[in-house]
Length: 594
Image (cartoon, rainbow, N blue to C red; front, side, top):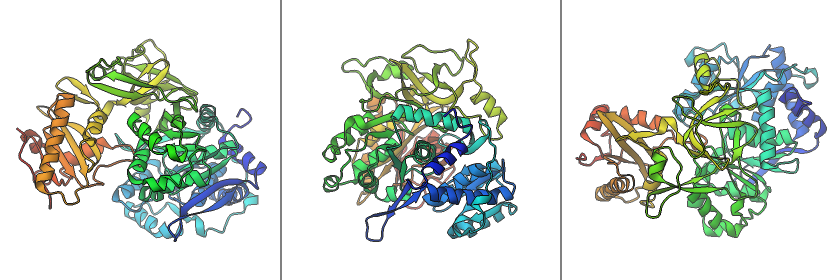
């Protein structure tokens, strides 16, 4: 790594040395209901990247932000690498199609990053141009790279980048706040790639891949760029292929011999729910050495159920690799030992509410926590978020990180950067990143318990929303995603929004399910769940990586923009919600909880 001042130099070295080798296998559905794939070689990738880079260099793009709106592996990788070859700052973003949320997100990124160029494809170029016109940004140049024939690869010149130059802006998922552009430098990227390699024991012989979108940190840094850093082969699938049929992901792991790759806990849950036994019998997952589980809270129940169900396909329990990371740390921060079962702890639920990890006593409410491993290429401190005091092992506080992988900060947000990226402990130790995540160190390993902004303080108690959601989801096989949060009206009220697959459900059945939710929360957590909304599947918002957007759900609820199939609301809470908006067409209102 020391021989490379920037990621562009490393990529160019790989491409030159491995021109004839496979760089990426692009997997997608075929018209017969199966999978088809095509291969992008290192040589092809290098030529297309240099062709685009020479055009960008002639256009004066050095240091400018270039938005990439592409989901095709070939086009995206050529565009991303073309930006790095040109010395431009790549800005991956979700394709503005399919949902108003994606369109709004792209518009926000265009404004926030002050982009000068947009790289897209011919099918989307007109829609992108229209969006720019509506925003009043007609000065932004748009290029459809799949129709691009200009640029001379032989005219490309090395951009002369320094280690601390920004390589790309990684916009955060926005699970608890508005998306912000993390400035990832070449130094950050090289350091984190080395940390991933050491932690996961990958090599040039590894086959790394998955389905996560390229504007997500695990999809970009883990699945797309790590194979290039290794000089290995990446195997990639469009996210919608997985969402429509999770079986396709495991078929890709089988047929293309993926050794390293994964996704959020939600992905393994979907496989459990939607893949049939006879389909499992046709899979061979024995070559899957490192099944990464990250990007959202890791559930022991999910890993155990997946390992048991897919054991006949050769999946090994010890292949699971729970880890912790975030865009602000480029990607990986902590992880365990490949091939070793993740450590787990049964802790007393009451003690956890007091931010302490204590062993659960027989007969007392308990919570099972999964270790996210040890620090990988960085320092981890658990700190009191109010005082900056370092906390001892076994005590829950905010997770702070420091190291070469930690990004420079958020694009154009100096006040937030001073708070988040330059934290100082009570004893004067400087230069930490405040993650906003809660966790504890025990036995040298990190146990992540939640996010500060998600914690619900009800009747003086600290409740973790994911614990409530997990318990509620077990009530019925009809229940899907759930979101729990608190709202305040004189006192704090718990709100549970629960998706339900209705089928032939009638109002009486919905009332019984709502009552079951209230009873479950009251008995297990000893708080009143006086506000329950049963909603259609797809109502609960998640980011592209599967993170639950509780802050967005709370905002939608208070704005009266959730249309329930059935609801029970306390009168004080009903008064908070926009008048009349909660009783949309087709909704059934239960009696107010007394």
